[in-house]
Structures are given as structure tokens and as C-alpha cells.
Image 1: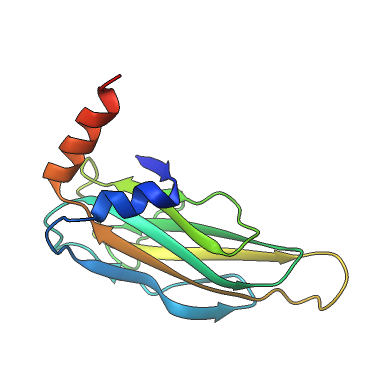
Image 2: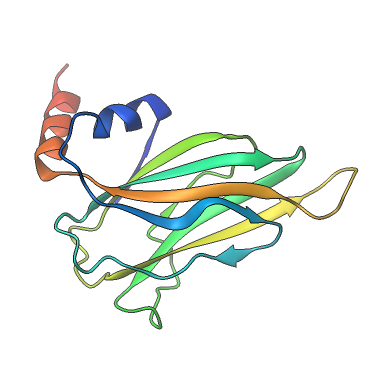
Length: 153
């Protein structure tokens, strides 16, 4: 299950919670000009299977798009064909967040980010982006609290 979150809510979601594990699926300030994959990241030891995915696009030129998805599987050689989560197509700098709930998928022990880039219009034909993708564990208590708040009128 994935849930798209606005930037303000994503900060509120992790504010004042106990220190949770941050995992970079794409390291900070990664510069890309072609499609690619991040490293396979082992999540087998995570206590909680709910992750806040935070995509930070820090560099971009006009007339180009970035598509970022997260794939998973039981090991790094057996990554599923279908993504577990996908961000909407991006055209601008900014912070974007998705909630990824893997609690019903205990077989997923490895995550890997994948990105596609596209450029159109005048100017250089090669796209260029600078971005990072971080996954932060969300505590079960915080998730219960947020779900209860969402149900209130």
C-alpha cells in the first residue's frame, strides 16, 4: 500500500517520534542523466514495515521529467517486476513523500530504487537531475495515531 503525502504532512509525520532508521535508496546529491537503479538495500532487520519515502529533487533543468519507483523482493537477485511504490512524474525541484506499508509483505527483504529520465524541447538533448531518496521507518504507535486522526470529522 502506498499513500502520497504533501510535504508538510510528511514532516509532521516524523516530528517528535523516537529515532528511527533512515535508509538511502538513492544517496544524497546523486546526479543522473540516464535511466538507472540505486543499490539493493537490505531491510530484513527493520522492526517496523511501514516506511516514509522522501524524494528530494535538488537539481533539474527545464523541459524534462523524472520518474522514480521502488521495487522489492526476497533478495537482490529476485527483485519483482512490478513496483511497490511510484512517485508521480516530476518536473520541478522539491520534496515529495510516499508512505509504503510492507507489513503485509514479509517476503520483501530488499528494496531498490529505479528512475527514468526524459528531455524534450530545445537545448541539450541529455537530461540532468540531482536527487536523493530516503526511507524512514515509521513507528506503529504513530501510524495508529495518524489513522485515528484521519477518521475524525
